[in-house]
Amino acid sequence: MPYTPEKNFSSIALTPQLRDALSRQGVTQLSPMQEAAAEACQGRDDVVLLAPTGSGKTLAYLLPLCGQLDAQSDALQAVIVVPSRELAMQIDDVFRSLRTPLRAVCCYGGRPAMEEHRVIRSVRPQLVIATPGRLCDHLAKDNLHGPTVRSLIVDEFDKCLELGFRDEMNRLVRALPGVRRTVLTSATDSDELGAFLNAVSGGRRGVERLDYLDGGDGVPAGRIRSYVVRSPENDKLNTLIALLGDLEGRPSVVFVGYRESVDRVADALAKAGFSVERYHGGMEQQWRERAVYKFRSGCSNVLVSTDLAARGLDVPEVEAVVHYHLPADQTAYVHRVGRTGRWEADGCSYLILNPKETLPEYLDPTPEDYVPTQPARRPVAPRWVTVYIGRGKKDKLSRVDIVGFFCKKGGLRAADIGRIDVKDRYAYAAIDRLKVRAALRAVAGEKIKGMRTLVEVMRH
Image (cartoon, rainbow, N blue to C red; front, side, top):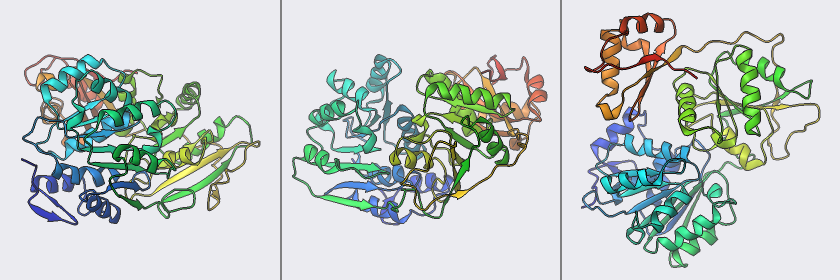
């Protein structure tokens, strides 16, 4: 039977478990956008949701979806299509945080499809979150049964129709003949929204369009302050170092245009004393995961990335976005800036220009000028250090076990331990920088949950 909600929460009904899960995430009520989207997703029409990045679109479609899926059925009932593995994993994390009895599987490239197939057979998911190519691959091999799917959600729709994804999206439509509702979300408008919906439904359904974009440059008005920083030299490194010094360790993402630039800029910042991580599509998945963990947990306070991080990287604590290289277009700018000012938080956007560059025409209003302090201030070290633990979920290790281990045998208090991520075969824990050495000496040779394992500061 369907996962039936019990009591009302705003415009949709939620079980006590869902309400508790939302409360733990600090969500006590839905935003007007989420209210409208949730109500629309319960109707008969297809839905187009246009809203700024960081405004909570994921919950807007996940919450009503939880009430529509049948937890007792082994049939695949819904798919969520996303343009990147990072966004797929992020949505999967949000879904799991809701703690419903529904079963989901997350599928994406960069790992063996056979491994995913084994998980699919074991889990028998009612929901699949996937990138277009990998989803088409599983459908073509009949690892997933497309005709039972009734709900199709395409998150970051504009990116999913860019060159390289278009063929997969067309194949996907043909493999899902039973779709009864399609939901498209994006932070930028697209002329192709209507054509895609018509291809899915054959024109048999209406479309409810919800537009919460603020106009102007596409950045949420009031929450994000924009600045232009003038570099006196063509090479912007010294200006970047001075700017980050002024930010005094506040979590910042520095966007560059090329993979090679990630390494050059990150190396320069590390040499200047910043705690910096790098992130781009040429890195192995394990190293990208490590970089994101260290940044998200506060073990590093600067992330240098290509536009890969502009979609799917959800770090609510990000306070500043720095455009070291100019964004390719307004869409790229909107998604970059969307990494800060998540939900109702405030943030800053800094656009560094050298003497040969000019402000993009789409910036409206014109950003204020910001002049970094010279000489540059010394970098501020992050509070936390990442510790690697060589055991994980497969060893029945939990976050509670890790906290207990460090408190009982490492002499730490709970306040000395930050974010903990437990993977299948290993785990990461953020430990107070001033106490990590003493704690590691204390736990050397000790067993965690009766198991001997490696416990050390994470190596790069």
